[in-house]
Every structure is written in structure tokens, then in C-alpha cells.
Amino acid sequence: MKPDEIIQRRVARELKPNSLVNLGIGLPTGVAKYIDEHANVLFESENGIVGLAAKPPEGMDDPDLTDAGGGTVSAVPGAATIDSAYSFGLIRGGHLDATVLGALEVDERGMLANWVVPGKMVPGMGGAMDLVTGARRVIIAMNHTAKGAPKIVPKCTLPLTSIRRISLIVTDLAVIEPTDDGLVLRERAPGVTVEQIVAATSAKLVINGDVPEMDLGVAA
Amino acid sequence: MKPHLKPEDAVKLIPDGARLMIGGFMGVGSPHRLLDALAQSGKRNLTVIANDTARAGVDIGKLIRAGAVSRLIASHIGLNPETQKGMIAGEIDVELVPQGTLVERIRAGGYGLGGVLTKTGLGTIAAEGQQTVEIDGETWLLAKPLKADFALIAADQADYAGNLQYQLTATNFNPIMALAAETVICEPREILPVGMISPDVVKTPGVVVDYLIERAA
Image (cartoon, rainbow over all chains, first blue to last red; front, side, top):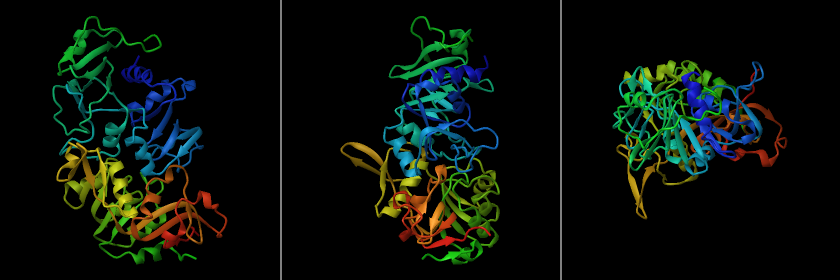
């Protein structure tokens, strides 16, 4: 199984039936493919839709129905569109059950940096700061390392997105939960050893006994 | 009845140095023809308040490419390298604001509020130089109101009284900006006779709209 699919399948299992979820652009968007269609997970996008669905077939899209990246999408029956103030009311006001986002760095305190590399990449925070501050659960979906360098570090060197602790980190190697006692290694990806995970992580990991393999719902 | 203008005549209302709010999200729900005319008009020194600057040379990106913008307040410029280049070169003074805070600052401006208190950005570099407020032992960040000389917005249907309704995700910042500017110019997809839009689906009442852009020839 490809690294992205491992991450997306594992994150999909975190999303509860009848919940409202925001998926970031890129790798997190692909989580939607692995959600049981009967689970009634509703996806929202900060540009103003509750009930976002996949891109429609070629030629059947509408330029006025898009996701937060500006790409055309479709909507589920029962979807609702809203203005930007209402959209961020949902996000900040505690109405969003989970957000799934990528990361540049996550640290031992569970702090996230995902919006700027000063002097190099200054895209702006868009909705990321509101999402991380306001969502009930913040799930980070990312590759464990970037060009071999650990992304789970003792302390973020890049500017933080929020001072709120994130809820869970899901990578192609592991599931890690930030807690008061530090980063707890919860699960290993299929075929990956604890030693491999520790070697790919510069932050200290808390390891309690045997670390089980991820359940992806299918054979890896 | 609201005056309805051609885009090239509407932009004559806007002087150099004007402060503009422009609706849209990555160009979706932006007043496309009005922005075309504005980019071609040779205006200079504009301040733009908008969610983003779309892509290079597209919608608000046309104003950036034309060198019309000297100051920008936005939440995201990552998909327009020309805006980033202008910022790094010091040609455009860019203030980046979290998206939910940006829309609330615009809403506060339009709703007559002195500001909004939010947790978003607290403790990050986005809060540098900004005031915090302590309420019942909790710390909040104060987001100050934004207003503009002009709001350039887009709608799906208008009537000749200026009542507006929006479509799908093209709604975004448009109805919020319609209250926050001195002069509101709206480019609807079509203009209907008064009475053809049900009062229940009017999202922006015509009373706050000053000019409509004529439909495309």
C-alpha cells in the first residue's frame, strides 16, 4: 500500500458517523475516498459549503461550486451553502467535529506549524489558524519525514499555527497522540518496527509496552 | 431603480488610492468583468481587502499584475506567486489575517461594532503588535473593524432595485462586504424585473447596493 493510502485509510477510521469534518487541501482531501458512504460524515469547506462531495465527471461541474482550493466539486443531497462569516462561525464556534490538516512540523507539546516558512514560503494562513483553534479534534495527516528529515521534532522551529494542542498525528509510519506526558506512540504502520519509527522521529516518544499495528480495515 | 453601468464606466467612479473590498474566494464569486475593466484602467495605489488574490493574472490577480495594488489585506496569497513576489520586493504592503478574523473584521465594520474578540492567532506571530483583552480571566485577541470606500461584489441574480441573491460557494465574502463600504458596486449574472426575486431568498437587500453592472452584451 502506498504511504498516502495508509495515512488516508487510517485517518478515515477516526471520523465518526454523523460528524462534520473539514479536510485540508492535498493529502487530507483523499481521506474522503475511504469513508463508508452510509456513515453520513458531512464534509465542509471554509469557502462556504456543508456537504461537499467529490469532483463531478468532466463537463458536469459548475464554476460556482468549489472547494477551498478553488477546484470544482459536487455536493451531497441535503448540502447547504453559507457565507464566509457563517462558515467560520461553524469552525470557531465548536460546531466542527474534526479537521484533518497537513503539517510542516509537530512538536513534543503537540504544537503545530503548518502555514509559513519565513523568507521562503509565505502563502498566508488562510483558514488554518481558525481550524486548529476551533475544531473539536485536530488530526494531522502527513508523511513522517520530509526528504528524510524528521517532521516530529522536540520543539517547532517554524511559526506556530495555534497554541492549542493538536489531537492526533497519523503518518505513513505511526499513529501518535500528544498528551500531558508527551507524544505517546499508539500504533505502527503494517510492517514497520518501533525502532524504525524512533529513528525517523527527533522528538522523544513515550512507548508503553507493545505497540499494536494500525487497523486499516483492509489487508495492507 | 439602481443605476446600471457598463464595467468601464463603473471603474471611473474609483479614484487612484481608493480602498476596495473585493468579493470572491480564489476568483469564485468575484466580479470578473469589473475587475477586467479596473485592471485595464491604469489605476494606481489601490488598497485591496479580499480573501486572496486568486491565481496569477486571474480576477484580483489581474490588478496585481497591472501594478494597481500598493496595499493588500488578505488571508492567503499562496496560489499567486506574483503577489508573493510583489510582497518580497516591497512593492505591495501585505497584511496577512486569518480568514475567520478577516471576515469578522469586515463584518464588524459593516455592523457598526468596535471590534471582535477571537482566540484565533493568539500566541502566534499573527498576533504580534495587537491588543489582547482579558475577560473573566480568559485572554482574547482584539480584531479591529475594517471599512472601505468601495465594495466590488458579485451576485447570481439581482433585480433593478438592487436586491441580490447568491449561488453556491460564490456567496463567500460578498454579502458581508456589501455592508462595510461607502459605495457598493455589484456585478450580478443577470438582472431581473423587480418582484421576480422572492423576499425570502434576497440575501443582500437593495437598499445597501449603489450600482449594478449591466449584463454582458
